[in-house]
Image (cartoon, rainbow, N blue to C red; front, side, top):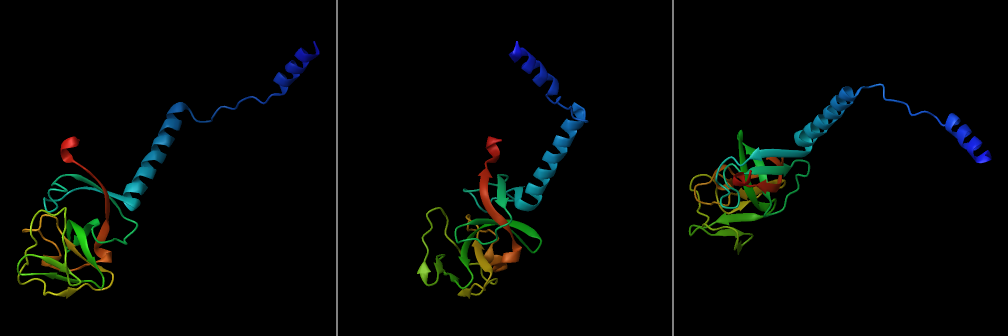
Length: 182
């Protein structure tokens, strides 16, 4: 009997659960607004999302493939694939050399960095020299990069427009979604 009296007293003194002052629709709208704001911040400042503008990176990245890139860290290494804006046009290219490196594209379409011929296993075409644009050997300035497209014949890259400064980098590509898999 004493136990039931204690349970009755505990039930009477137990604080009642308070209801939210918002109805379920208001709660849903608030949650939706928070989610939209977080996604906007993530894809407005941290990540970038864009389709590949052309076939210059084929076959590794095809025209129309969806590219997710990271905007915050602009320190890239050779072989990183980056998104950049040069002369008002957006390009996708592979970093070949960084500041202080010497780059040369020979007459017989070989790529030479710091006096060593480069053998690239993921590049399937020769690297022809574009006459009248860049003088070789070229020493890459500090905080700049020499970039090349993977499809080397006819692509616009550092052989055409010169080195790319760190300020012209939009970000480093972290994943590629094939267009035909969507």
